[in-house]
Amino acid sequence: MEKSPALEILVREPEGFSIWKGPPFGNGQPQVQLERVSCSSAKFSDNGSRLMVIKDSSIISIYDCSKFTEIRCFNIPSILAASLSPRGAYLQTFQKPSAPQEKNVVLWSVESGSSVYHQSMKNMSKTTWPTIQFSFDESVACRFCTNEIQIFDGKDFSKGIINRLRVPGIAAMELSRTAGSHIAAFVAESKGMPASVQIFSSKKDEQPQPVARRSFFRCSTVQLHWNCISTGLLVLAQSDVDKTNQSYYGESKLNYLTTDGSHEGLVPLRKEGPVHDVQWSSSGLEFAVVYGFMPAKATVFDRKCNPIVELGAGPYNTIRFNPKGRFLCLAGFGNLPGDMTFSYLVYLGIFSHFIRFFDILGILGLFRKKATWNTKAECSVTSEWSPDGRHFMTATTAPRLQIDNGIKFFGTNGSLYFGKMFDRLYQAEWKPEAPEKFSDFSDLAHSVSTLKIDDNKKQGHESKSFPSSTKTAAMPTHKPAAYRPPHAKSAAAIQAEVNKDTEIIESHLSLSPILLTSSLKSISNSETSKNAARNKKRREKQREKKAAEASSSSTAS
Image (cartoon, rainbow, N blue to C red; front, top):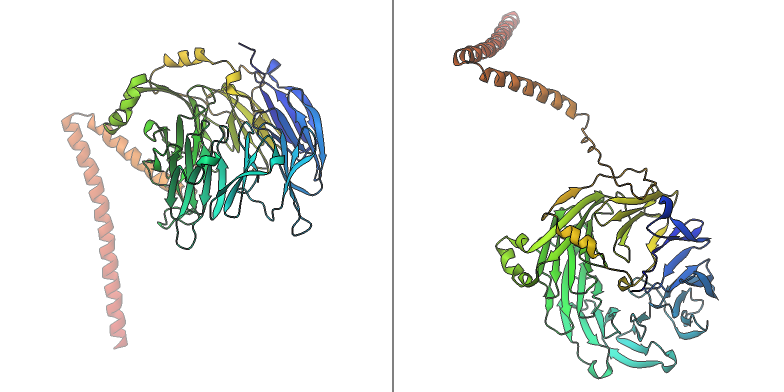
């Protein structure tokens, strides 16, 4: 087998970006492969072959990632956005229009440096950019406009539009990854008609009728997630308002459609609440969902939408499938404390067909092994597995957070491998590589299989001072004491007195029956004498008050 490629990381600071080599890191520190280059933005192509660098508002450079040398420079004034095609053959730019009908969206050939396609667009949003979408092999390209989808030959744009697909009211679309075999189109609600997602074949002779369709109300936006083999589509439908008044952030529903029409419906989630995150596995045969009100629940489903593994509940809103094997990371980032759980899952062959039945009986755990490790990465903004599946990187970046910016690398067992702090960090991401280029770590999977089922090994929470050696793991520390408000001090003192009295009584319980009886009588008599004295004072005050009232009435008469 060919030698596995080295892992590379793009790190962007205010002064520009640099490329790190590793991990593993020699001498405990990353090796800088490309010295800092001034820029305002940088982005890899999907296959990692090329890098787009925006140096200012008019200069875009394209780098060949094999040696990180500049191969093309574009001088385009008033750039507002730019994007590379999956294999880096095309650069797409959006410029500020200077005239109403100006063609401000341009597709450039990186190889020749010339423009191959133009169009006009007034406004840009997340659902409309990039305007032209490519399949992963760039054989098919398409864009949507008013009431239709236009399809191009991704290898030759001089042919113009080769196919048209009419979809009235289309508001968003997503092209499948595998050779652009299918197109998912979203139609928003209009005039009392429900919103819908439809899947069409990109082949000209199969286009008129959708191969799958799902309609739903209360939908403002959607997220469309294709699996890598283009057989299944997850549709996360979201509305701005939750009519049940259970969530301030609106309502979300997860739908699942297949290109063969075998499934068109909701994913059976077992807890009410929002859908926080969803991701397909690298094989495209399973997907994982984090959902429900906190503590959120996480479940892995198969391609028939049957639950196969329950990952438990906790403060989670993020899930990341490892690109190799059965590892996954379940985490709670953003406004959550940063808990992370690394799990290794093994499905036991033919028994997987009976999982759904035994899950109803509550004994799903008999048919899987799940080894878990827990750790923490507070204030993380981004997170992703390395292409070889051996490291998990989290980053705290600006402008989301202006302090404690840094990068952390964890192993598959949750141990802290390396960390570094920055005064200001804008971006940290892996250079994309095909997982097939890396060897399988079957030795690690074998060692995990010897562990006990659900063997939880909690890792300590790492401090802000990171280890300089790659062999140093996170050390366990004591949990911080719970916050106690000032007004609770008196309550704590009272509770201490109560506990003291309880200890006295418990000590009496160990005495002989005679001494126990006498002790209880002494406690009872002391309590009785106190009550009697208190009642005597109350009666004396009442007599004095009556006497004073009588004397005042006699004086008045």
